[in-house]
Length: 210
Image (tube, rainbow, N blue to C red):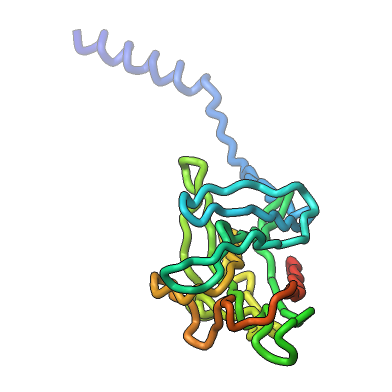
């Protein structure tokens, strides 16, 4: 029996010796390229003051008209029924814009002071698209987050401040609202103390992707 076991073990040893053992080692490179943006978009929406509902304006809209102003007999000022949202973001790729905003006064029936720039405001916020198709909003406190338009002279919102999202600027008429974010205390409303006529101003928004 012992001799038989020795023969079997010897046979197995010979079989194993006849089997070639192969080994290989390969490094695979795994990669993916996130595309650069192909353009910058500026989308204007009208926002209902009561419901907060957004209505997207036609592409290329540049006129932010607050008419008609309605006289509020409680506060004795003129107010619109809407304000505007300007969304500044990139198209076709990743990244966030670097944005500069400057206001210039236009027609002022009051003369040299108390024009449109004193009677209107801009609020700055970062928007991040969420899973439900809406956005999560964070106010940019380094920019007020609300300022009179006349105080915007090279207001610079960096790409870092809106990284992972896009910039939204709300533009509205000053009403003296104390609801956060409150209207700046040095603003003025439209009232019967003002001269009648059309008040205008220009808001230059320049965006680049570095």
